[in-house]
Amino acid sequence: MTGFRAQLAEQRWDDHRFYHHSLVNQSLHFVSACTFLVAYVILWVDPAVASLLAWGVAMTSRQAGHFFFEPKGYDHANDASHEHKEEIKVGYNLFRKWVLMSLWVSVPVVLLIQPTLFGTLERPDGTEAYLRHVGIGWLILGVGAIVFRSVQLFFIRDVETGLVWATKIVTDPFSDFKLYKSAPKRLLKGERIDDHEGAAAA
Figure 1 (cartoon, rainbow, N blue to C red):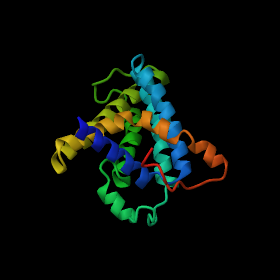
Figure 2 (figure 1 turned 60 degrees about the horizontal axis):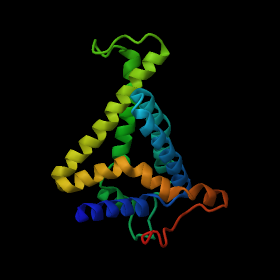
Figure 3 (figure 1 turned 135 degrees about the vertical axis):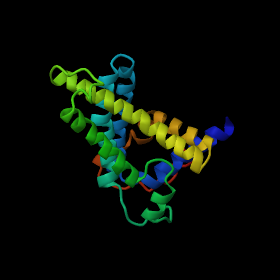
Figure 4 (figure 1 turned 90 degrees about the horizontal axis):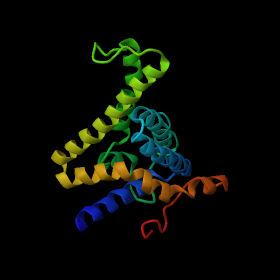
């Protein structure tokens, strides 16, 4: 268990120091974390609504931070190129995220074209029923994405790495809330980049 916790802490620290320099990105991650935490509660009551909230707000704000605001140049703080960081990324790097978000967009499009999904679903009676189908589709996609990458890591790394990464992803909203809660205030003060000094000790 000590090794598991140590690797979890290492994955969290690498993710933070390599991929969260922008305070805009950190602020969007704080918004995402808050939204995911609400979605986690709703999940036990209404999975479709929870999934719509998680993907429609939490994931879009989270990935927008990475795609549009995170610096893509040479990382002088960690002495690493963007290409190197993409190559060593344990989970979903930017390329894999583009694939995942393309699948995300395809779910409502497919259900709009084929509302019953070739007879496997009841025909939605109105917009609300359609959105519920989309929500369940996104929920399946989210769970599938975690399982798929975890199993990949079982083979290209080892089982523990895959399990640690899956644990990190599921618990990221809790750690991101704590880690990035001060980012919006710092952003409003005019700061733009976090050099992560002293963050490792925290």
